[in-house]
Length: 174
Image 1 (tube, rainbow, N blue to C red):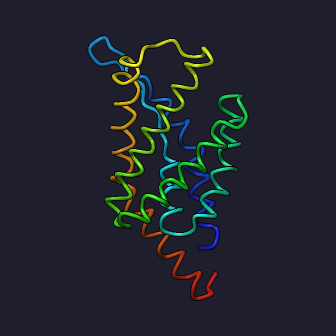
Image 2: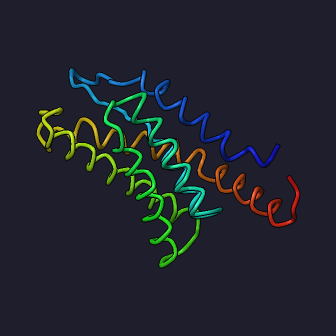
Image 3: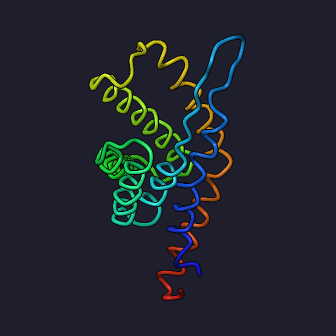
């Protein structure tokens, strides 16, 4: 059963993202703020750092393609960005440190990079017409706060599950 833990968590997070997206937008003082959950990519970053870079990249491609097909109809955008972010996180952590707090901060920075890259791409093709200041205020900042809360709550859990999976894998126990 532990063998299926990582893919099962990834599937659950993939299906939870749109559910948490239903809470968005939030109206505060007549202003709308959009929260974009990025639980899956943060989990894949933890998988890449603490378990296997190759598996994180494969999961990133698979779930990126699924995300592309079911949510945005532009095949290849998430399938490219998810594995690149996993590789980038692994490269950064290799040169800095593998502490869970460092990985948490790196994950949040990479989510900000993902959101900015998506905004830039969608602006380039004319899909989004808001200004960058409005994007920062109404989308990026609320998204970062929501994902930071999620990662503070579940980052240690991710690390413990992945570490347990790694230990059992090395011992040859399924």
